[in-house]
Length: 124
Image (cartoon, rainbow, N blue to C red; front, side, top):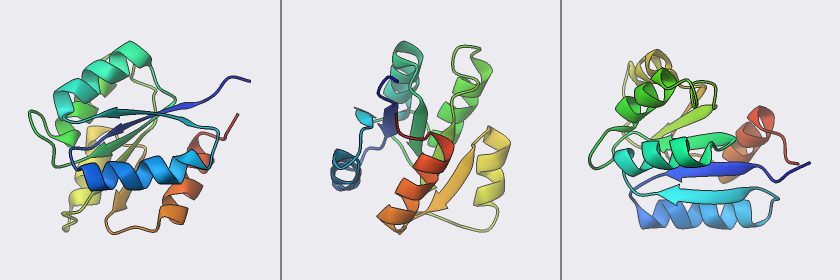
């Protein structure tokens, strides 16, 4: 079985470092994008097995990026976990409406996120 690729779309270097360290202990291959536009391009070019998408991103919000990926037949079925630090009432519904597979509010337990990743895309 081939190695599974996770694309993490996040503008905050500290948050990317946490995910890098978390996934270093797994067989997943991590790709990163720093804003919504490059995240959409990376997803279309790479066709990852899973996308972790921040909401507050430069150039294009994570919700808009998710909607664009859902509208593209190549990426429409790629699971997307929306992650946000600005969790407010209705945000989970907005993520769901945008086409998210799952929604996670920061701060979150890295172990909980890894369990969710493995639930959606089991390791090779």
